[in-house]
Image (cartoon, rainbow over all chains, first blue to last red; front, side, top):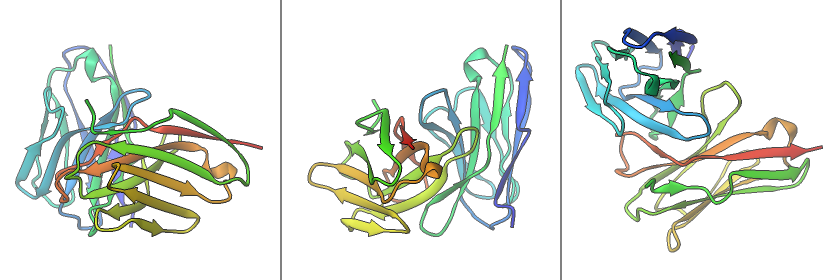
Length: 111
Length: 113
């Protein structure tokens, strides 16, 4: 049982490039989330999903897209990377009590 | 502004002492609260949670207290150890369901030898 895994761990993008951050969980959780964490700050919710085929916007969705074709996977897409998207991105899934389990994060730099 | 916030950005305690980390929230409709520990370079790690129908919940060396009257949450860590050094976040779920958490900025707990 690996929990929540994320790839890649680190990435540097040029302005305007696109990429997909991968997230997989093996706990059969229905609910999954993407957060971003800027230096010295708490986490802000980007998108979430309550099950396969269902996604919804969080607090800071602009510049991102998500899909949820399976229970296990919840990829986050950046289409036109901007410096403001430099951050650490965390994926999470939710257990029975709604406590969230987080992956190790992807550190993204846009230059 | 954020509905969840922390009183102190940094807390320094002696090893072996008890630590108390505080958190204020502004939404009286918040139903569920969680404390997370985040070590450098890692994702947040679940510590303990509490629902709004409770005042206190205890775990191993940790206790969470909820005062709904003043909208205050605290995390008590007993007999603080070096491994407790981390940033601690409180988070709330406004809907009591699965639509994501709202996090405060965090308190950096530093353990002095």
